[in-house]
Image 1: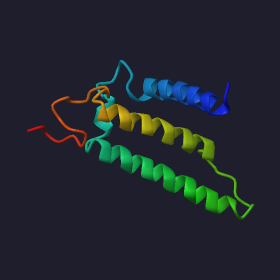
Image 2: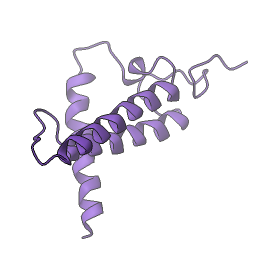
Image 3: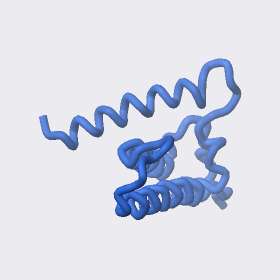
Length: 109
C-alpha cells in the first residue's frame, strides 16, 4: 500500500476520534456550529494550520528547535481533515448544516 494511502487512513481514524470528543452524543454541538461563515471559517482554520506549519519549519531550520505540542505531521493531518470538511460543506453534508443556506452559510434566496 502506498504511504500516502496509509496517511489518509490515519487521518480517517484521527477524524473519527476527534469527532467523538467534539460532537459526542452528550453534546448539543454539531460540526456545522464550528463554521459560522461556512467554507470561509474552514478556510480560516486551514490558513492557521498552514501558518503553524510554516512557523515550525522556519524554527526547525535553526536545528535548535523541537515542537512542544503538535508536530508537523499532526498539523498536516489536521489540514487534510479540514480539506475534507471543506468539500463536505460544499456538498451540504456536514452534521448540523442547514441545507437552506449556501456554502458561506448565507440564506439561499
